[in-house]
Image 1: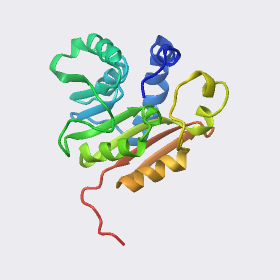
Image 2: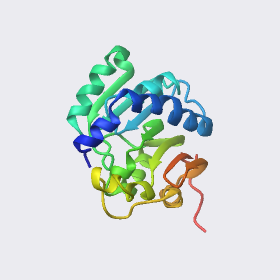
Image 3: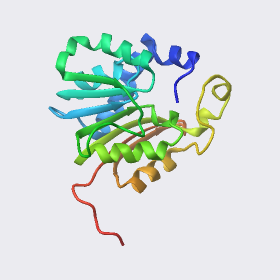
Image 4: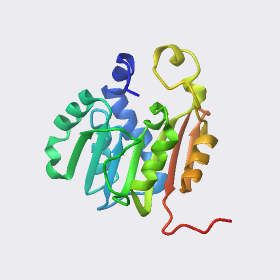
Length: 204
């Protein structure tokens, strides 16, 4: 689901970029560590701030990234042009990632999954494109904030099956992930790191 005009303003400004770099990213880094030399994917890259963070803070060697909104993709390409071939950006959908299975060492979600109507499908796609042993870094917004005033009137979110922290963690487990780190803030925000097992355990 594309952001409305108010959300684009809220998500694409220097304050948001500062919070993402100095508040959100350190929490994910503390939970999951750096990804030195790894190939990473960012789902819902917006104007490219997350791409910079994945390269500069998490120390990935290459970042692929996509966004549903072509306008955001254009902004991200301009912002990240200086990284050259270390970055590839396209217009795409988190529920249908055009890459083979086991393509990435790490996948990053800076507050995107709660915008996806079929968000469980997006998590399954993340699992599919991760290599065994790879890590999923997710910062997410919970139903208590989305459904509360004033955001329920100002922001555009899918109406059905909004999740809380336990719901998101449970969906990670259902997809096959092993949750390795989790933090929350006032039942409104959460940070998660989950690993794709090296090999699937037999059922039972």
